[in-house]
Image (cartoon, rainbow, N blue to C red):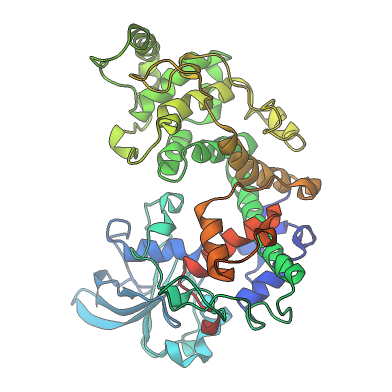
Length: 478
């Protein structure tokens, strides 16, 4: 396995060019200081009252009360403007801008000390504590770190939900040309956006693929870190469980996998039905009573699950339980319901899919070619859409979801284990709203989809969406 701190740069030869384009001249963190989350996670933590720790203290040990975290700034300059905090036992009121970083020396690495836009910063909030060089900060800057007091798992933060508004169209890529009707955007390619390439499609594709390499590099580095923290089997188990949850249910799926480690389920051997009953029982998704409109077959299956769970429940008394309120069902298609996905997860668990030996074999095969690496057994959900729905044959996990797992979990897993050959035959991300939106924003309505036909180019569009459109950034901010 390749350690998180030593992902070979040569695997992603174009990623450095993309990083330099995004943050020209920025000093990279030492490889020994890898952190798997972004500043946006910490920004959301600071911004949201329901996530922010209540027992904040300054670096000098003074208690902090947040009267106002500030306005999330989508323009150039500090992350939050107009923050108001009460500091010390006397609760003195301090107002000013707030800047968020992962490490304390990011202030210098990002050259904020030489940027007049940051002269109004009064609060420097970091994830990790440190010993900042006070001479580089505006006089009286208050330093606050979150790592030692935060009880929230950063993995559970949906960064796309913040700052509760869509970035203004004018803050996406600064292209020249026409954008969507009424947007005021400038959309077609311009030399200062993709440096020194003009409008040559081949060079545009190369820039997109460089961004795609950066996305894969970040995913691989995070996977290597997770393996070092959890072990191969547990890391793969948590990531695939989260992938089965889609966007809205990733967090409860991940929480369930962490509360119910893969090693604790070995006691059930190949009895996937009991594993499934345990997953349902601990997830809070096992119905209390059968529905009045359920078929006899549904009621019988429901009772068999309860029979299993009643026998096993006492073994899990010390395990944290989820409730139905932890799950999201709004706009959820029946085929994507977590009750069905947990059935697939149970089958994969007993198939040895997450065992160290099997995980090693995942370095070579693809899961989407006939589904051979992801066995699906005959079960109630293979012939039923829902508890009350009419009988109908349906896959537990469709091909599209298997492709997403392949690309977003197994490819980084293989790369983290040093299987660089996988880059030669990457699965292509199916078209989705993010890819379409970013391509439309970049190239306008009349562009050729051939620009992002390759797997890396599509990954690149997603990376650009996260770095610019989602963050409301413009290259003019650099």
